[in-house]
Image (cartoon, rainbow, N blue to C red):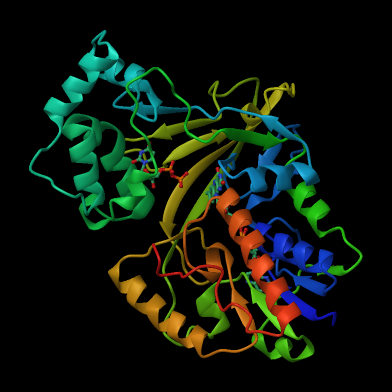
Length: 385
Ligand code: FAD
Ligand code: UDP
């Protein structure tokens, strides 16, 4: 087998997993990241006040993919953790996602699952067929009162747009339950790494055929030194934004430090439009097995990203999708580069999907290198969903 030399741009989960798989298959990888740390947006640090802090916002690992679960457990200890979220709306605290407790608290009832289902069915807007917008989806599945209490204000703050302008798919991520099950996620494996995500990514990258260069931005002029480039940065940046900048929402986190316990839960959403922030994260509640007398909170504000901001949520409305189509066409004419990850394919991706796609893409790359066939242009089709 001929050993190839690859540049992997980005040391988040996408870049780290691909680098590891290629290294284990006998190739060499140099991993670049413009930041001074690995793990991308999943980076965690131990705060001087004690708790582990998720620097780029709260990250809970959850998956239904056995291969991904086994993979992450190879590189660090995952502690079972069931994520539960609370929400403040119009001066009262509720349980989210909408479940039987939320319904009974909100309507002041003691309904059984069957009766709650009937109540919500009565409130559902039956004139809506297949929901297209976020607002349609909410009015169809929970009715106007719950929509206005929990979704309308929060979503306007999160996306800077009216829910009637956003796609139904954003809300479809959240379940509605007619039981008292208040888990935020449905997946069979849910966990938090005992020592944070960063040591896991460091362990993935710890291989004799991988070199990591931090605080080093990569651009396409550096590609000549390598047989192939894997690009997990923003797809528009590879093309010097020639079709315009793809739009993202960014987040500002305002850190506060307190004695004791600030809010008694990891995440409290603030659903009223008048409250300028969307949620407060209290990091120490992600690790109930640790004990800290002090606590650190992040108050989270969402706004449109400009070119110097960290890109968080791809906007993916009609205009951005048209731009993306142009970038996808440009990418198909490009040789020697594979685009992947949340920025390389301009999609919202959970960590487990990121790892799953990275493993699958690495398998295809290893096969292509072995057979001398074309390397994939994309991990998955960015326009596919
Ligand atoms: P990233 O982590 O963004 O890594 C890309 C890396 O590329 C970055 O480190 C960047 O610095 C680097 N880079 C870019 N351009 C260049 C360049 N030119 N040269 C060098 N380096 C470059 N997922 C979950 O499963 N559970 C959660 O609870 C969860 N919560 C989230 C909360 C928030 C607020 C956000 C925004 C995301 C959340 N996610 C969550 C998603 C998770 O962050 C992503 O799945 C994951 O970060 C994707 O990894 P990645 O490697 O594709 O991208
Ligand atoms: N959402 C909402 N109210 C809430 C929580 C979520 O309206 O209290 C909406 C919001 O538009 C958000 C979407 O549901 O973007 C998906 O929620 P999720 O918790 O998955 O958002 P993320 O973790 O990606 O920020």
